[in-house]
Length: 228
Ligand code: TYD
Image (cartoon, rainbow, N blue to C red; front, side, top):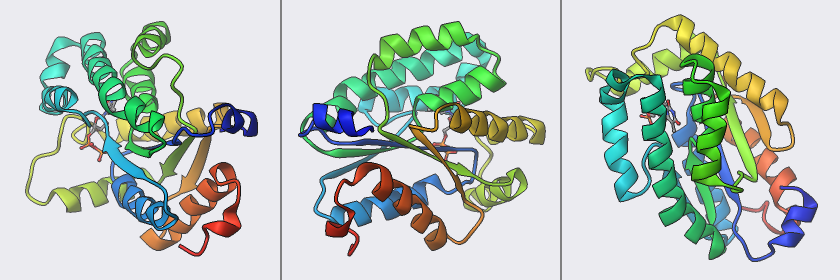
């Protein structure tokens, strides 16, 4: 968030989204950032998409089970949008208004990358849905975790164990390479909001990079909180 935006909404929480391909370590990094910000006496809400509210969790089940795929890319995108609408209205906006910092595992950039760049859903449709679901709400900071595809997929497979891959994990290598490119493009197009972070290191090293981005961009008086 720019300095002027911070001044416009002094009591409002900050909205940080985490994005990246499969196995890039988003949930690990969100947990680490949440505990560091909590130690700095900030109120934190960790949430995720698709899901994050009771209504959106139902939609999550539909899309990740592959049912959305049967309906075609546009309809699947509408399911993600419907889930986001409920999540923003019932969870994210109320929390931000109360001054809580919201850390969200995936948000609108996932739709742009997965459904837009890879699913070939026209940008016009994605933008229109975005206007309806999130309106003016824009993350103050988006952390994009970047990792070679093979490593991410290996991590995702190790995490899954003997379970079957979900709707998107099951896509081929070309899909995941395209996904990485799509996220890099988003980061390059919106440098004021996005930070591309090299996630090919141990979790604590990556957490240090994430923290540096949050401190530099969102914490006006870093000296008062870095002792976390
Ligand atoms: P999840 O199990 O949360 O995966 P990850 O740990 O990789 O975040 O599954 C979410 C999946 O849904 C993931 O493959 C990305 C996909 N997705 C979209 O395709 N579009 C969207 O708008 C969102 C939010 C997620």
